[in-house]
Image (cartoon, rainbow, N blue to C red):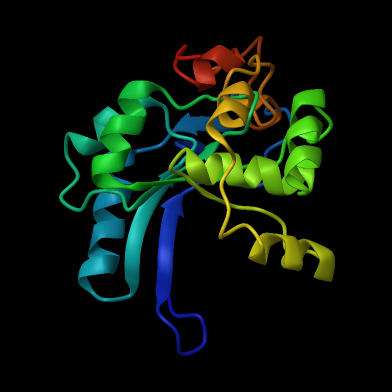
Length: 209
C-alpha cells in the first residue's frame, strides 16, 4: 500500500458499485453488482489502523448511501467527492450539513459552464478567467476542488485563486444559474436498460436528483 516510501494520504471508494474486470461499456447483464459496502469499509478501516493510509473517503455516493455507510462506520469518511459545478449543484442540503460535520466535500468537474454569459461577465468584471471564477465560486461555497494543472498558464491561474472574493451580488447570480444535465452520470459504466440490475441513471443516483 505504500507508493515508494510514502504513506497513502487518502483512499476513497470511487463508486458504490462493483464492475467485473473486462466489462463492456455499457455493461452486459451481470457485469455490475452492488458494492458490499460494510465489508469493503471495514477493510479500509484496517488500513488506517495499520498506518498504511491516513484518510479514507467516498466518491459519487448519494445521501442514501452515505447514511448506510455511517450506520456501521467506525472511522468516518474524511472526504466526499462529488461531480459538482455551477449548473449541477447535486449536493443536497442534508448531505452538505452532514458532510461538513464529518468530511470535506471535494468537487470534481468544477469548471463546467465556462462559456455561460453570466460566468463570462463576472470574469470580465473581476479581471479573472472564467475558470478562476468557477473554481472560486466552489471554494466560497465551502468545498475544495479538483481542477486541472496541465500547463503553466493553468498552474498560475490556480495559484491566483486566493486573496480575493467574488462580491456577494455576483456570487448570488452565479449560484442561481439553472441546473442542467449531469456531466458524469455513470450511464456508460453501470446502466443496462434491458437486463439490469441497474436500468436507469436515476437508479444509479437513488432517484435523489
